[in-house]
Image (cartoon, rainbow, N blue to C red):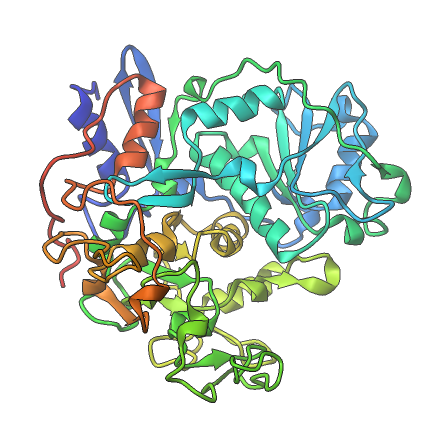
Length: 496
């Protein structure tokens, strides 16, 4: 197909995402292609972006890899590197590891280990309606990172490592993977190292495989994401697209082609109405009374502001979402490595673990085996800022191989799109804005406007919420794609 200008490029991307042809939210199994300025681009659906791990993580040479695989590469990179990789091994650590295992040891010739915290991989950006923190970096920011670390993603193998194993550093690994994959880096050139350095030291790596200092970034790379003629932007779902796909009530709808995963705690999902095992049942006195069952009622359910984050206007969840907290995907006793594939698959299908933990719905009860993810669904995952959801998304798209989309704006963006007063006495969005997400949400508002921070609103009446994706497509192609103007949300193709 030859593209006939800007709108056809956007339309082709929407078709590839399934948003114009069905209710699956972009889970189709094929890619499409088109030509812009004489260059052919491949537009991948979420199913084409996904990759399924081997049941034995030791057998993976991309996606989720283990220390055993990394050690094999380190022993003789030139001869042991995976097929198709002709460049360097570049390890990006989110933090330093503990004493004696600070940084995976580079050789300074073919293997390099750089410190790259999560702040490298996020950027404050506007979706056209509202400005949101912690979004995927734009093209110029990505090119600056490739320059800083001298990465050629068409030749090099890039490994995202935690350094010190922790929940935040596992999230940071996911942000690295997500940004690079979104911008078109091939799955064969990208890996996530399973577990933090404190676990890897003695479980695949040894003391001699670490050193105290990271490699010094050379800041001399020349590769640009414009050279990656692949459009993986369907990895991100926008607020407008999510609004289109939500059901007409807060219920667990099976057979609609989407599975929406809230990676936060039950306390946040329920806006303080319930808590889950390990959360404080008495939030006013942290640690005084921990919930010991799968779910339980807090002591004072009317005092629910403890469940709010980022001075938000409200708390709750989009209709039709199911909740299972991200921490259950990781094994803290093994350096916050991912649990076995079979255990993760059981969770996704609706099963519960030995503690009775599994997906719950709007009634805060476990949905039960067979009542969570359905074959053919596209997973849509989010949290407060899509950091925790990086872990749940890695589970669904990198380990289990399910088509997955990240709602990158997350609840920070979603809750901001409200007709609720902030502490300056201004409504976040006017009552006639077409982008009020309260229309398809369970929520409880802040108990006082004095507790609500203002948000930077770009255009309450924007034509769509695709500004970030349009900017990113345009950065690659040189096209200027439409992102503003009056308008309203198109009808939901799934009904409701």
